[in-house]
Amino acid sequence: MVHDYNKLGLKAGLEIHQQLNTSKLFCECPSLLRNDEPSYEVERKLNPVVGEIGEIDVAAAYEESRHKTFVYQVYDTNCLVELDEEPPHEINRDALRIALQICELLNCEIFPVSQVMRKTVIDGSNTSGFQRTVMIAHDGYVEVGGKKISIDAVMLEEDSARPVSRENNKVVYKLDRLGIPLVEIATGPHMHTPEEIKAVALKIGEILRACDVKRGIGTIRQDVNISIKGSKRVEIKGFQDTRMMIKTIDEEISRQKKCVEEKSCRSEVRNALPNGESEFLRPMPGAARMYPETDVPLLKISRELTDEVRRNLPKLSSEHKSYLDEFGLNDELVKLILKGNKVEEFKALAEITSNYDLIVKSLTIFPKEIARKENKILREVEGILNLDVLIEVLENVGKKISVNDVKNVLTKIVEGKGLDEALEKSDINLKGEIEKLIKEKPGLSEGAYMGLVMGKFKGKVSGKEVMDVLKRVL
Image (cartoon, rainbow, N blue to C red):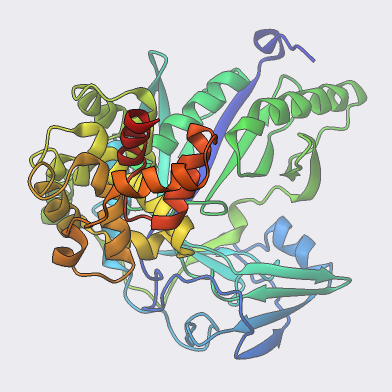
């Protein structure tokens, strides 16, 4: 359905949660997700407590009314902090630095002193019944389409436990995700069309990806707060894919229009569904859910730390793209470098050779093809073909090897050969071998001969070498 967003008075804001690529926020446990069997399980009930204003939060009271039992799967990569059997440790300084980088890129004012807070959460996703969160910055902005969108606050907080199953009144969680550092970015309600909401989400996403954050499904979660004239604010949670944003927002506008007509509007939290619709999750929480964390000292952010962060800010992908365009790379190769976060490696290799296409292929395409061929994990292959190895290989192009030999050399290195051995040229008499094959199996197509030769020598010769000889002898 097409809506007149201006007439409807659409107002929307974003809350974006992004995992940081460090160990956990209040302990030294690794941020490692597990798919094996847990070491043991713990069963608990959770009860709400009054917040700082002396009341029990309405969302917490709603969760208590459901009388659920929670089971927690514990691994050897968890500790007593995650079980709420030991006080939290000092806040993770690496996570704090990354969060401060994000704040600077969002043009925020950083608080020199902040109080860590407890946010009541009794849906079982936190063993303690609360989530630790600290506001570290405020009053920033991003520019999208010539318009400034305010960033009201940036929080550093711990992620929740990972749900495994829900059966009747029993919910099972893994403790692997609990405590992974998150930044939460809250914008002002200054977006007035679904397209504008999506554009702002993509811009913030670009800023986050410039920093050391986790990548992949589940590492970023986007919530949208929406209201129209006559309705109440509704929070839609669970966007994993910005491509569904416009459809989901339009569906919510249609739902709110109906609520306005029926005079049945209420403040609530809803869960985004794959088809673009949403479902009721719980009442909208209020201020009563927050109270100070007494086990953690005040967070003091020194001028020296913020100055250090400002001196080492990463560049955004749009800035990197402008840099990479100067080398004459086509759009697809630029995308490969940016998606793989390989800009710094590209810069280093560009000092070795002016064959920039070869650099991109060596950093992105060849490792993937080799991993597939050798049945290895890509991360393992990239670890073997590190920057030092690539520098040595590319330094030998035009000396010991040709451009067409690079992939074969890299394959040999992944197979376990040393650099000198991998660089050795094969003593195969390729012309003689191909002439012999043609005599044995006359009348085949060029492609058929190519397949037979490549299959026989399995990476010892390049496809271009074979094709050059075939063109001469056929």
